[in-house]
Every structure is written in C-alpha cells, then in structure tokens.
Image 1 (tube, helix red, strand yellow):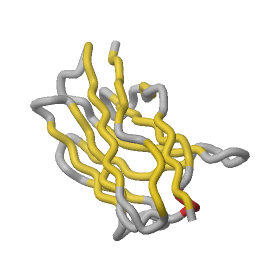
Image 2 (cartoon, rainbow, N blue to C red; image 1 turned 30 degrees about the horizontal axis):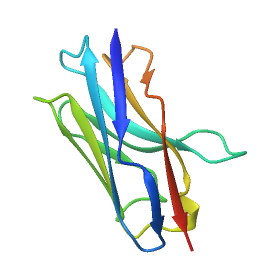
Image 3 (cartoon, rainbow, N blue to C red; image 1 turned 90 degrees about the vertical axis):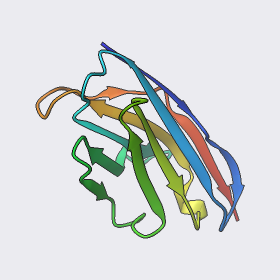
Length: 117
C-alpha cells in the first residue's frame, strides 16, 4: 500500500503563490502517475494536474500557464507550484497516485488552499 503526506497549503492573497508537496511512502516503486485534484464546496473533485513516470503532464484548462507540476522520483514526491492565484482556486487540494495504469488511485488527506481577494 501507498501512504501520502501532503504539505504546503495555506492562506494567500490573490496574485500570490504557493507550493504544495506530497510525499509517498510504502509500495512506491515506479508510481505510474502522481498528481493533484481539488474540491471546492459544492463542486465535484476535479483534476488539477498529473504527471506520469515518463514525465508527461496534463493540466486542467483553468490552471494552464499558472500552475506547474513536477516530481522527484528519487524522493517519491510530487510538487505543485501555483502562481497568479485567484479566489477561484480556493479548495481542498488532494494528492493522488496510481501504481499502474489500471490501479485504483490512492488519495492524500487533503490540504486547504485559501486565496483571499
């Protein structure tokens, strides 16, 4: 099994930046995908960004050009640098990893990001 520990959330003013981190432990050999989702109140959880083991990235349209995902495979850690934040980015951000293309995702506990106007 995989355990995930997220960090880096908090309160930031509109236009500011934050960096989220998610460290995986346990059965972490060659995690197929590592990424981030978010959920705001009353809205279904949505993809923010994911990165495959090979380095392919996928971003939601709402964050393209503002957020950057990266991963350190040696540390089994995925990062999300969020810039030009707006109040619409306010949500709980969840780390998610898959051990293979067909595996069910493992979720972190979530970290709150609040952007004030």
